[in-house]
Image (cartoon, rainbow, N blue to C red; front, side, top):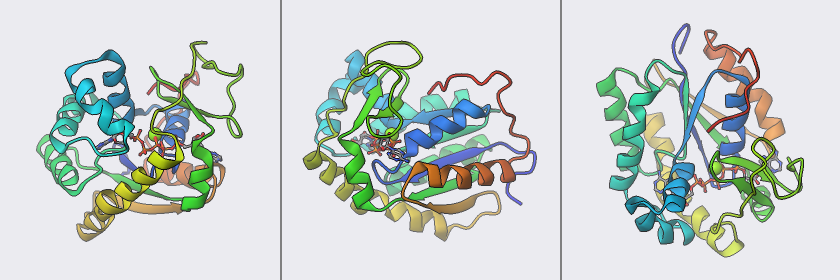
Length: 239
Ligand code: AP5
Ligand code: MG
């Protein structure tokens, strides 16, 4: 038993393009859950030209990893706002030191992780999706021209604002992001598995499309956290 009556405090873990943002968005839209995407936070800082944004811009555009210090600064300032909420972290932690720092920060707050979901999608499936992806930058909403098209081409369904392409969504940069994943991020899985905790459940979901993975994800989440409530008025996902 990992969460009867307790809070969902979840990591959405997976390769670039595995569907972390898409699946978090579906959960947030249907259930009373808050999601925090490290990539979305960085893209917002870059768009606002903050100090962090100016440092991160070329790193993100080239498919590298932003420093652990900066990432921790961005994320830990948000953790306090998640108290007494069901939440999902997407894209953080992404290195072993980030994983250790997150564990410690959550431990100090008395709010350890309760679920880690590892999305396992084959590389060749992911590569074909990326060039079709469009995003709504302020919300992080994700669209795809061959799957999940916007109602009006080029514009966000909710706000009507224009969609943009991510500068790191081209085959060359994507290959570097995938390489970074294997080098720096995938070792986190062994780290999570090596510290079995009765509070934290670790599951791997396999599938070639989010439509295969979604029913599995939904049943794990609702089965493990029966206190989770559906939104009364299905709210548009807010990220
Ligand atoms: P981030 O934004 O987190 O990028 P990422 O991990 O590379 O993941 P993506 O957002 O590309 O993919 P996703 O898994 O969310 O998939 P999505 O749902 O969009 O990070 C960007 C950069 O920021 C990093 O490279 C790094 O530089 C920096 N950064 C971020 N966090 C950091 C950290 N902690 N430390 C250091 N640096 C950090 O889906 C992908 C596509 O597939 C979409 O087009 C979608 O529509 C499509 N799709 C989804 N489901 C289906 C389906 N069923 N069928 C067909 N297409 C589908
Ligand atoms: Mg994403």
